Length: 189
Image 1 (tube, one colour):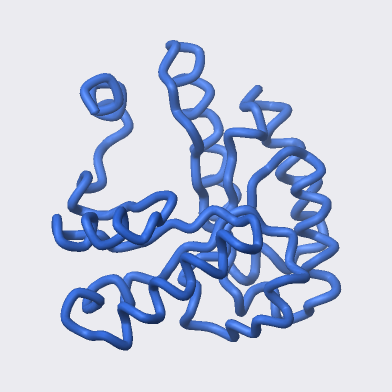
Image 2 (cartoon, one colour; image 1 turned 90 degrees about the vertical axis):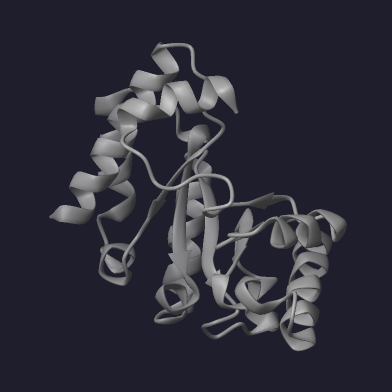
């Protein structure tokens, strides 16, 4: 399946960068709803990590809220098994799915990724700004890292820095690039 190929290719590339001495803090890979619901997911990921030699502590799997909520108990069990391997777990597009706070505290996750739809207008829309700052505070108080998606302007980066958002990603920092360009980018950033 394509999603398994993507994960394998990412781990292979991550291992190449690590062997070259590059400091790659974390490699993030999205898991589809279908992929997350597979009973063999953990074993497949274990096999890929073993075959590629990629250290699981540098792998972060991004999962949407709706993927987990399809079967909460099984989802939590799967997340716990992945974390036992040393893999980090991120909730992708946070704020656009179920966002039930009672479930959030039960989920074994490391990172909340604030959906770009809130970031895009937070400078001009006080409601979006309030949601972003609330997610940052809540996530950090739950001992999660908070990452803002879709940062495209300096004003976005400044706002997020002012409110102590842990991490950010988006065109303001870099456009997507071929894997061959990453070493130069990392050395110069």
